[in-house]
Image (cartoon, rainbow, N blue to C red; front, side, top):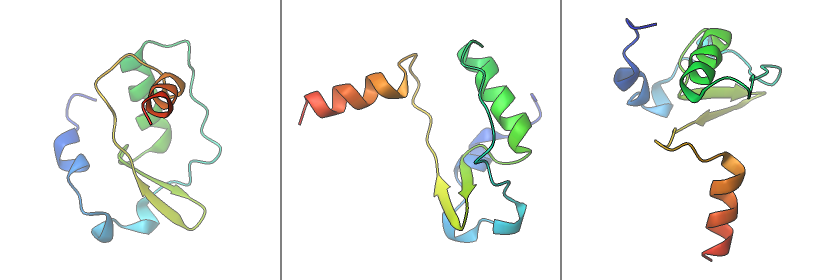
Length: 83
């Protein structure tokens, strides 16, 4: 995994991503009991590709990963509370 250049992957233009190369990740399961770094590595292995892009049916989504230990739910709740 250390040979993967995440910065290059992160900076790819969504309009230039090869749709055929993306794995439809609707069935990928994440082991939430793993530490954060291990969850990311596990996700990348299961996707067999770029972790910053996902294919969900016909849609392509570009993801970002915040540098935090907060869960998605905690971030979402904070966002709603600040509105």
